[in-house]
Image 1: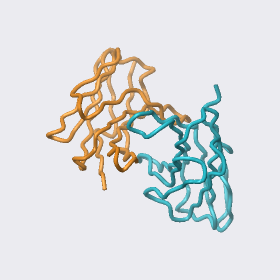
Image 2: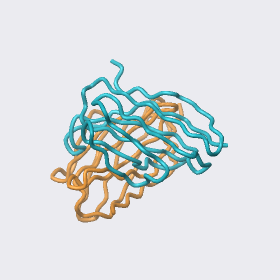
Image 3: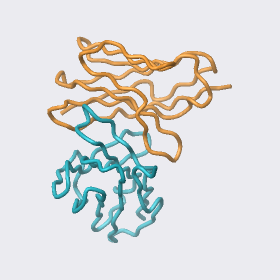
Length: 114
Length: 112
């Protein structure tokens, strides 16, 4: 089972460049999430989606954008990359609200901005 | 908003010993508390969770306890094995808000 797949696994960007982190899930989950994980820290929620066409801001949304045109895909867009966005990014999905269904995480995208 | 504090940040135990990781939360409305294990180069995986109407839950060598009055919950791993070595995260969730707040993680090392 593929589960949650993130691409790319690693990427180095220059300051000011833009890129899209891809996330796709094959479990037909309604809920999808983007987190960032800084060294020695927990996960911070960037954006989330409760279904196709619906997105909402999390704790740290500045500098990012998302879209959810299909149930399977939830790409994260970085515009004008800044060094502060160097982090490991995790995408996750769940069938329903977190109180009732566990989150399934991808293996992450390690992003460095120089 | 919710604030979750996790201690210790690092924990080293001998194989076969027990390990305990503690978390405190600030939002009294939080009612769901999952624990995740993250191995090197991988995403977090749910290992156990507990809801606010339960005081303790056990799954083989892993148990979680919840004290709602004191607003803290703990992960207990008994008979630790080297493959238990990983980073463990706690989280707290107010189901009305719908979003989890994570602790900063505990790096557990089990020495053979």
